[in-house]
Image (cartoon, rainbow, N blue to C red; front, side, top):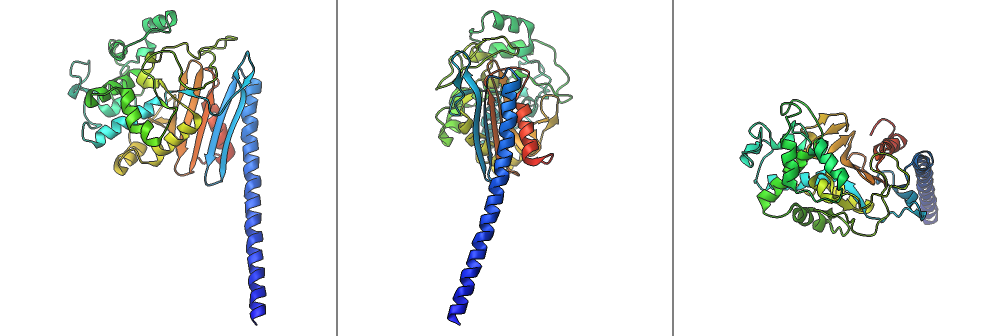
Length: 371
């Protein structure tokens, strides 16, 4: 009888092992097919557009995918390949960092989303009717300094010029409102500049120091931070090309002074460090749970640039994050708690072909319409 029981146990164990092995092989085959399709669509952008190079990172822990892929060139004249560890300019992903620091200050009781701007800057035009929440979700109606013709002309003539934050804010506030606060949506860099200066006012520290102390250092990031001014891109990096339109050989890696974007877009990072950041940004850990849930659920507005834009971050389906577009670089950064998935995509150029296109193609491949 003991022998029969032993034989039965062995047979059962073999059956379990075979079953698990078959499931694993099926999953592996499915994932390889998904990865192959994502690779093909990434390669097709390199073949069919002027995008020089792409870094794509997709981590879906539910499916068991951790795919980091590069295509094209990081340096066109020298035909150097893209490197997944390169430092990249994060552009408007910076806004999510500003928002995170701001929410930490809310948690500390130093301000609230319902406060009007007049509480801190009573001399600003319309300060008594613009709230902190409206600055965060771009519903303040405040004009974007980056759309001022004289500012754009000055930048074109001297792209290396340093701009002080208060100067950019003053330019934005010198124009009429786009609409009454809360009555519309318009993506305005001035909003985030005001938030950046407010953080400095409340803490007595520079925005760079606050982002480093509250985000970069706790995560152990070594190639991520905000740049106050200057054209230098820190770290080991490739080249960035084009400033909105294709001009053969137009290298703009270190063309524009960081002060023209500051709180609105001057951060830099790497794909893996952005992954680490966005997973905590969305998954939680920077904020108390109640504030984290508020940030992920409230104050979202449907808009033309983003599917929905909320409190210094955008939402696409179950994915939260942002994307940044600036001379030489275009970078998307998203994480979904529901899908347990993170997507980071970076192009080393600024053209009409955006990382958002590739993000949506990846979503279609991985999840169909349900993402």
